[in-house]
Structures are given as structure tokens and as C-alpha cells.
Image (tube, rainbow, N blue to C red; front, side):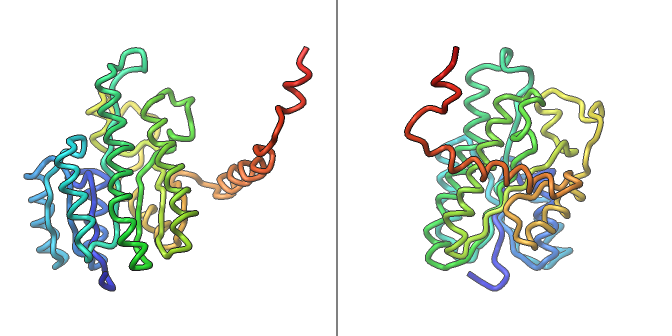
Length: 262
């Protein structure tokens, strides 16, 4: 793995993924861009080669297709120059849970959780052997807020947060950095694709501001980065409350409040 490792970015044809490509290219990193839209990636690659002077490869793939996902896994697993993964590809589904079809939900879960996990898993042995590497997983504040009403999308993003925290605990001591980035509403194409007008939302962050803030968290080696959260102590308090419960989870008997119910 080189001093400035290459970065593999999924969902790289637009929005957050494209902005990560821009920012990492301007830091001097070569790129491998993964998305379904070859033409858009070609345009991004041509611009970044010209403006940043870096190598940019494109790898068109639908990550819900097992064969195409396997091709990306193979490139990621075998290319020792790639040292950073930005697991950004994701989707939502229009409507409420009662309106969403099982097939749509299966595709959503496949992209937001299965593909993300397989890509992280594919490279972990190589990272462990090298004693370094970085995995950036793009989650969402929705994963902390069922009140937002996006039940399955939010559940996939809760998975992303939990997985990243688990990777931090397991792989951090081996030299591997894992970061969960939790955006709030951001001006990307995910809204139109899920049937919502982004302009009707009360507060929307621009993509460049979101990625720049996420990279500040990356440079600080934060495990969880929440760009829209004004007071970092709120997250610290939340996490401390969770940790305070841990000893009480390990009990041989039900709590007194359940055993003596009227």
C-alpha cells in the first residue's frame, strides 16, 4: 500500500460519491470509481485526471447484481494499491412501509447493507496483513431516528452505524480505521429516485459542505461523524448512556420490574 493509497468509491457517478472523488483526487489520491452509469463516471474521471493529475479507473457495476459485485470485490481485494474504501452507494424507496413491495425492500437491503458489508469484508484480510487501511461507511441520521418515518431505509442505516462501530473495536487495534458518516438531508439524487422533492424539505445540506465536514472527521479519526450536529457533547452523552447500560445487560434473571409485575 503506497503512502497515498488509491481510493475505491461506490456510488461515484453523482452526489456524495462524486464529491468524495473530487476531494480525494485533490489530496493526490488515485481513484477507482464504481457505479452503474459509465458515461457519468467517464466525465468525472476525465475532469479529475486533467485537474488533479491523478489516475482514475472506472468500474461500472450494479452492486445488487451478485456477479458484478463479485467483480468489484475481486478488484478491491487484489489491488494492493487501494487502501481506502468509501462505501457510499445507497438507495431509498418511495412510500411508507405499507406501500413498499417486498422486492423493492429486498433490493434496498441488498444495496445498503449486503453490498456494503461484502466490500468491507473482501479487503479486511489484506488490511489486517498490512496493518493499515481505512473504511468509510456512509450512513444517515435516520438510522438514529425512527421518528423520521423511513422504517427500512433507517434500519439499513442503523446497520451501517453498528457495523462501523464493531469494525472500529475489532480492527482498530490492528491499524485499520473505520468511520461512519451520518448525514442529514443532503442535496442528492436519492430524493427524486425515491419520489420526493428535495426542495420541500425544511433544511438541506449541500454535498460539498457535507463531504468537507466528513473529511474533517476523517482527518481527526472520528469513529462517528455527524456533520449537521452542532453540539458534539450530545453524541458523547448518548454514547455514554449506551455504555452505562452494558453491565446491566449481562444478567441471569429478568429484572425485578418484570418479575413482580401486577
